[in-house]
Amino acid sequence: MDLGLSDRVYIVSGASTGLGRSCAQVLADEGALLVLSAGDPEELAAAAGGIGAPERMLLVPGDITEPGTETRLVAAANARFGRLDGAVVSCGTPPTSSVLEASDASWREAFEASVLGPLRLARSVAKAATGEGASLVMLLSSTVRSPAQDAGVANGLRPGLAMAAKALADELGPRGIRINNVLVGRVDADSPLEFEEPTAVDGDGFEAVPLRRAGLPDEFARAAVFLLSPAASYITGASLTVDGGADRSL
Image (cartoon, rainbow, N blue to C red):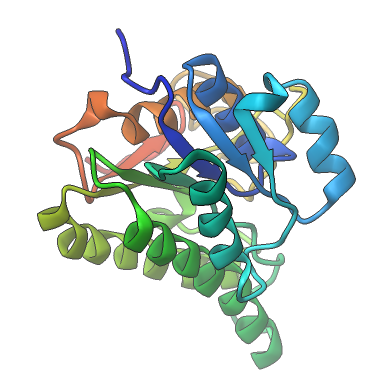
């Protein structure tokens, strides 16, 4: 299937490691032009060297938790490539905690980093998007639907961000801009692109995962890039769980 991504321009946040990097790789392989962002400039440059040709990407170091980064990314995309077709928004991982023991400060910091940061980028991209099938994907966790142990702050905040994306899909739909969530399950810790999450599977095993294994980064990235692409042109406001079947809801 031709995903229709050739020469379209996408921002990828968190592009130096984990699923952000894996999404950037799949986008590059599909012919997209990229604006890659991450907090560590050296890590970002090292990752970009293995993703694709330098002339087909622009590196913009910065953390989306810091206000103003989203504006720089959008401006850089338009200045370099003259258009913007969407973004992969990495939503981060709040600190391990219980609801009872997490301090007010922990909740505030996690809200700023894991909710407001991604939303600022999503809003900015949506306002500047070219509009020819523009699309955004939020990389979230399967804990949106099923709470995980020792992840009280994440369990509290992530469903709110997923619902905000759902509401944003209503607002953006008349402009032909789509936004979807990918709810990531357990990622293979032995893979080259580790992105560990608290998980709802029993113990350290995979008894509650029908496929009896963790997912590989590319397996999550391919799902995300499909939703981002024009091939998914009639899908918006959806939350796709990619977890090997661990989620028991419909």
